[in-house]
Length: 518
Image 1 (cartoon, one colour):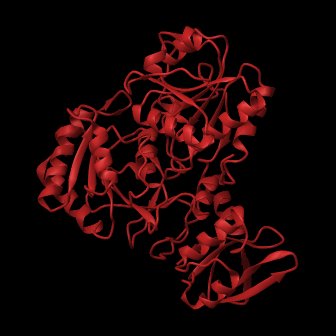
Image 2 (cartoon, one colour):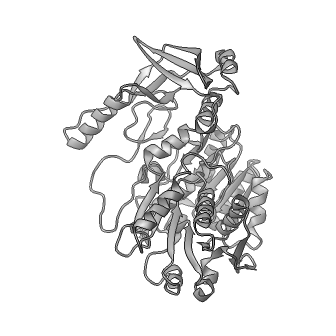
């Protein structure tokens, strides 16, 4: 059996429990990009086959890159014989476990009558309506149980993809995209931190009309694919990206992408364009980018879903959108962790973050429910232009302290009170490291923060195994030290980067340190 991260372990059982208690209903699992959906799918498959050894399992998607990744990952993790059925990939194999493209199978459901468990990867890509390829395929089977995996449990113009009368999925049984869980994945070192920075120029969409629920691409191209705009954006990317290794840029259309790439190349930045109408295999371009031949890739609607390159540390958004899916999926390309990657810089020329919100608290609008007033989706630090959630009190990147004005409304008042009560920020005047020994347990490092007259403590379990050890090593690495033992960590403690402030949850009997500002 392969190793799972702590947050991945309960998912399979949650799915099986739901299916056993809700006959005829289909669950949905939401996990952020980079959190390991294919590993989760592999675990569900492995545990299902241990429970029901003769069960046939089908994994479906309709994007070639996703099918290829799923096939390789499931084969690797389960060590089982996996079939691949996709005309686009040149394979028509049917095994007990089969990964298949919906375009290749929806007309012949009779070939898959034996399959009783179906996993739909990136299921947010399923269009609404009753005449989709997926619904036609399911109609030809004998009441299979299916579940969805996605990083974005919503779609443009129709709200969430579960819980409605005509939804394919009935309930969201496990959600790691919720703000606090998402932030914990970053804090624990499983996802990379994102720094979303406003830019000197921003694409003004006030005069752009809507087409199919999003901004009209032809109008955007006419207004924004202009030489002086492109040149200014490229110069800003080069200036702000000088310390970043691998760039990914999202453009409006093919011509826009080519103009961006041309300007980057003129400035000595090795750049390629990737889009769906390429005359040669886009796999060659992706492999060249991953291997470092190109520093930058300009993308048009290809790498928003299913693309995996952990080394991406700068994303520039030059394509405005009102789609929460496009917004989350594009920025999500920077969430994967990699050695020597402290964060991923997001340069949002398109204003998508201010329009739709942070990707762990995105604004999803249901049809017919236009926004009328309400709280702001983001706010901008006046010192460094970093974009934050409205509830943030201190800028993580420059330390600016926001002023909160009291508003005479129940919502804003209660939000302010809860934030003060449970998550206060304390200025750190001193940090002391000491060895903590406990019988029959590995040594730990006790860290004591002196904050005025108050002290707060935390224990770094550097010698523990599993989640605690992983979290401790991430804690040390983030502060600039590599250590495998408590004694070594104390010895090197003078090299540890110390926080200026700590955020502490003082609501419980024993205060818990929840965040740091350096």
